[in-house]
Length: 156
Image 1 (cartoon, helix red, strand yellow):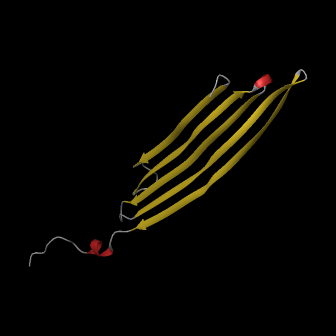
Image 2: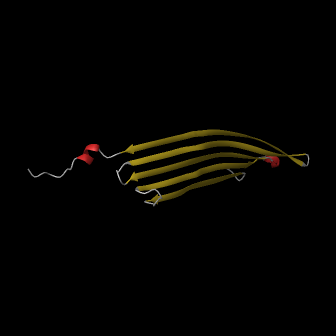
Image 3: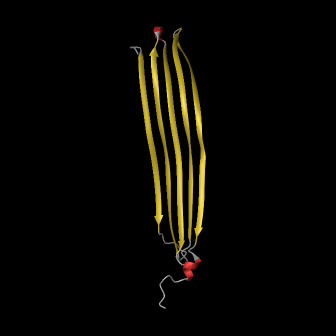
């Protein structure tokens, strides 16, 4: 590195989150109790390094290497219980996706006949994280035997 060189570094990290929850909310249908929650997350990490170099005769060049990583997640949970027979319905839904970019860029400026000639090139590699989706449901009822048999001891 010399007086003709400069290096610039930048970095960003941001993650956001939104959460919504309901519990035991009364609904118009009697004997049902339910709860639900939703969570939404997203964010990006980005960073770059740029090298600036001045050659002789006013010619200069910038070389930049940058990377970004974006991620999105969404999760929803729902549960409902019938208070009469204690049967339950549970449902879970999850989705995730994202993209990662790697970029290399160079640009050069050359003074030429009272004007400036600018040339450059850029390469970007996109890595897509395909959507991952998961959904599950579970319905359960109490054991029939436990509903019919009194577990208390008998006097004989």
